[in-house]
Amino acid sequence: MSIIATPQVLHSEAPLPLRSGASIRDYELTYETYGQLNAARDNAVLICHALNASHHVAGVYSGQDRSEGWWDNMIGPGKPVDTDRFFVIGVNNLGSCFGSTGPMHRNPATGEVYGADFPVVTVEDWVDAQARLLDALGIRRLAAVMGGSLGGMQALSWTMQYPDRVRHAVVVASAPNLSAENIAFNEVARRAIVTDPDFHGGHFYRHGVIPKRGLRIARMIGHITYLSDDVMNEKFGRQLREGIDLKYSTQDVEFQIESYLRHQGDKFSDYFDANTYLLITRALDYFDPARAFQGDLTRALAATRARFLLVSFTTDWRFPPARSREVVKALLENRRDVSYAEIDAPHGHDAFLLEDPRYLGVVRSYFDSFKEAVR
Image 1 (cartoon, rainbow, N blue to C red):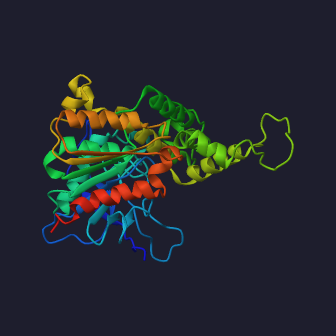
Image 2: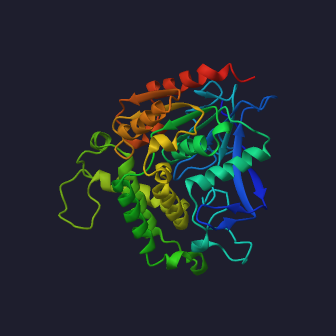
């Protein structure tokens, strides 16, 4: 039986200082909770989302078809993160376009829509905002913080920013920073958006338009990086869209993979905000906790106190296993308690969202290992 999810909103009037030197006030965080917070308030699990996800982590919305949360296979009654035991919190980050204050909202200081004037936010800023949400919920210490991809970066950052507030950290398909190749992919996607004639310097809301062409291309670029070559070959190969001979055209959509990417791009441009895409990919670029320690990740992780589970996937070339092993090595050098699983899966980066009995089993076993410790 699925959880019936209900979005909630935390309004904060107090300014939130940002790493850029700016601050944001009168902001809202949209979140959902699943399960029950126990009397000791020690069974809370915070879920951090990736680029185009949201607070809707698990369950469904009442009366809506096909409204499952983006990690519904992972979280719920009897699932690896068992909401019969744990109180799970999904929060939408600042700058997003799914409820929390972002570029589409009005700046209380001017009364105008933020647009391109929304301040740049970082992973560390998101973690600070999440900590404020936990304060409002009366949760001093998390049983666990968990996330995949960009969400994994937030989980890792929690253990450094608030080491005494995290007992366990589950970091899936993530990395301690982006490689030059990943930054390059993000920049090409951003250029597709900002060079769209409908972008208007990020203030397209005033003109009643949306830079859909740029968003489509950005999504197509990103989607390629989420899939493995094996999956694309198995699913599409060199199949022609209409099963007929070549048209010898430079502009027609002929191959199935072309049709698929255009479909994904069209869908994305209908629901995602262009300024949000710029903000979140830049937050990805900026994350690098070792930078403050002259590139020494071991020193960066020295303040951590949590136990860790890291999971990677063999065909994930966006965040390959070698990046997770960097974190494992640095944690072991700090004598931290670390578990590591490298899953031989064909799905590429998207594997962290998919059904894989071995992957789900690893997470289940890890949460089972400490579920009796919560009261």
